[in-house]
Length: 302
Image 1 (cartoon, rainbow, N blue to C red):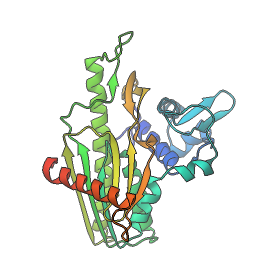
Image 2: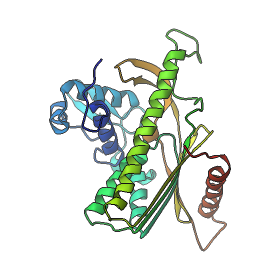
Image 3: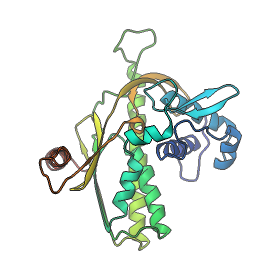
Image 4: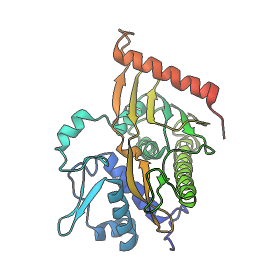
């Protein structure tokens, strides 16, 4: 199946999918909100209705949205919970948000972030948002330091895993497994390149004098994602495994076990400088030590 392609060389399907995911993640389309009609989305992104329909189907497979004939498409609570979502206010009280975490980091003169994640997809969207805020003059950091740990590309990850049709639990199709793992690596490369370029362009344009982006790879399959503002605060979220349909680039749909980074429930931990024995301080100290040990002893540069 042929794909429409945009100016950046990636498929239009991926461009629209990434944009809608980001809008759901940052609350533009909040829990319970209705997505714009497919015709409007097609006009906005300058793509075909077929592309929008594929994106809507993929978001539905991931569990972000539900569509009903005659009622449109609405955002649901999370990819792992069914039923009617609670009001937006309740969800906001119990869930930490990556967008506000990154925004707080970028209001500082020196932005320091240490990240351990599966693909960097969520981080990329929020980094690009902050880059635009810098261009608009809303914030003016003079130094940005990002260290990111990603799983080694040679690692045989436990997810995503495709199941053989009508096979027993745990059985996998080797060819589909290879395609799913390569799809994951391609997503990681795309978003890693995107955020690296977004940050380095700020230095090239003279907007941020000092920018240091370092990415290393570790032989670890992430069971959680971790965002650290060293000495300040952290976000921690486990990856929950679920069954879903994954669409490959040629349109093939594969039933698989996977994790969804955008669906991770994040908890916030704050360093209490006045109490080194507080739960927040202990968490920050232990997770920073864990990150630094992996960075120094396990990680390899590409």
